[in-house]
Length: 309
Image 1 (cartoon, one colour):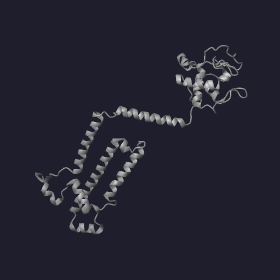
Image 2 (image 1 turned 180 degrees about the horizontal axis):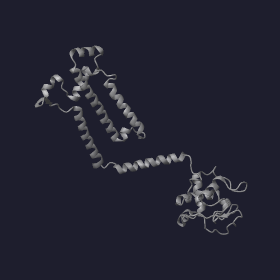
Image 3 (image 1 turned 30 degrees about the horizontal axis):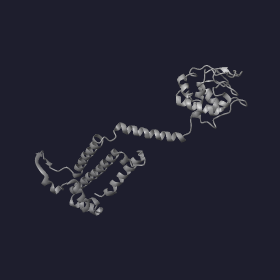
Image 4 (image 1 turned 90 degrees about the vertical axis):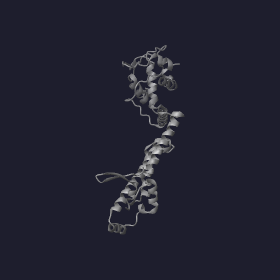
């Protein structure tokens, strides 16, 4: 029977929509998803076969229904609509090749002697499309076996590691241009050697003129004792570097020239100088108050030694 959209248009259209959706949702880089991921290609092939199979079944049901109509009903139906594509000689030829179906008039040729309560059995062969699909799975299994188990191509662990490296590279690329979201509320004390080494480099570039290389203090206060003008601990030190010290006579704000994540490393390095006892330190200023906080000396001596090399 006639459909609003012919099967030869409907099947490619649905297939194209599914393919486009998979390409949109699966990140496969510069390659199409069905090429980069063989299982996606296999799914699309199976999906296409299923679409064709459904169309064949629907068409067969329509044909059977049509043959069950009376001659008068068939005449009325033919007059009400033009002859559909499914009734054309071209379509019937394709349908016959894919299904090898027998018409109702030919069922006697494949009728078996089995008879149970009036129910007869037909000895129809398997549809060629189903047979070809089954052979395709065997061929796929053979290729998969040779590629991954004989030739030793990448396994799941190697594929996972590759994906992790690609994801890490993507994250690193994003972080190069991503906004720095570090602030006083989120800052924590860093104790790893690379961070302390970066903090030391920043200190030597920006802070030694006022605080001396050993942190003993010169124009600025001594950074190695437990007395702080604006409060000790990672949050206070970070905020002082970020926003500046006392109005009019304290340290300037460094947030315009040093990004927040680097200020965190710089503050962590400053706190690593606690208790280092430099030679001839600057006397404690009158405004400074003793600060006691667990974790202020959390940087290990080994880390400090590595950073100071």
